[in-house]
Length: 103
Image 1 (cartoon, rainbow, N blue to C red):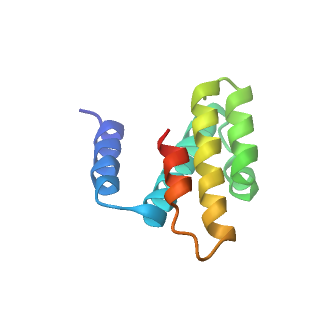
Image 2: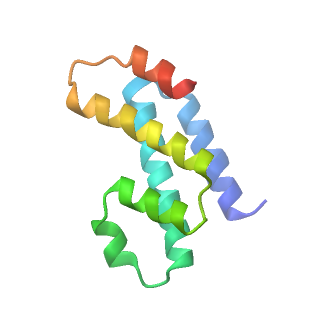
């Protein structure tokens, strides 16, 4: 088992014990980090630029470069929308948002 696979399994194990907002935040951070790593592999030396780009720009670039499928991009976008919903509604419990992202 390679390092990347071990990292993914560890993340999934951690995520199984999280609920609601924490699960969404951890998931979003993981996805964004994975997209950054894919972009860095495709465009070496782009660290400074990547750290300044918002998530949707990174996602769009990864999709245009063909390193993220349309299906994965749509799932990442949905996760980001759930995260943003929590960020803009401090009282949100997330039940509707969680059902949306789970689908």
